[in-house]
Amino acid sequence: MPDIRPTVGSGALVLNATYEPLCVVSVRRAAILVLSAKAVCVADGDGILHSARNALPVPSVVRLTRFVRVPYRTHVGLSRRAIFARDGWRCAYCRGPAETIDHVFPRSRGGRHAWENVVAACARCNHTKGDKTPAEMGWRLHALPAAPKGTAWRVLGHRAPDPRWADWLDLREPEAAA
Ligand SMILES: [Zn+2]
Image 1 (tube, rainbow, N blue to C red):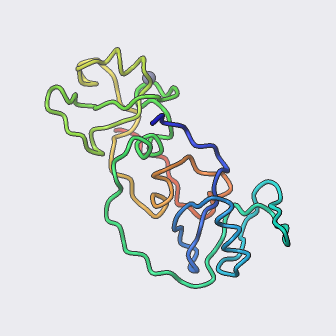
Image 2 (image 1 turned 60 degrees about the vertical axis):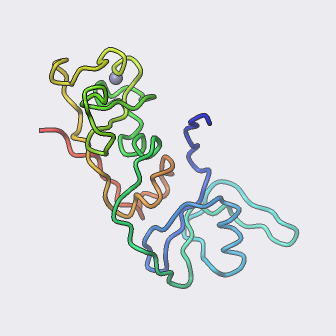
């Protein structure tokens, strides 16, 4: 399956009754939640949705009218898209657009496939680095790779965030490497 970078605005952010971010659903699904009074629209997106009987602004953020208990997830799954999202779709070495995943300590030399050892990288840096470490290349990582934390990751494992969601997500830049 091709790895398609999701389009900003292609979904709606769902908040719990407590305003805690829960997940991202299609705008259609969010509209159904609003029309059935299961959620209220908190922020509008672009355009109007029409159905046989209704017209309502495309929801960008909706909040559930009733609190939903969610099992607390202790770790974020390591996926290609999640790594790109954590690293802001930028190369960890040159900050250019990233299209590959690099193992900081190369897998061929026993490097682990873990949050602490994977970074988004551009094809050029990845190819140039080969099976060397950043130290051997004289390169510095823009940020120390680490497992992402916070509620934002319930929604950001999957896509680039819509800027309209920023108020409800605790988005922080990765800490700069010392
Ligand atoms: Zn690069």
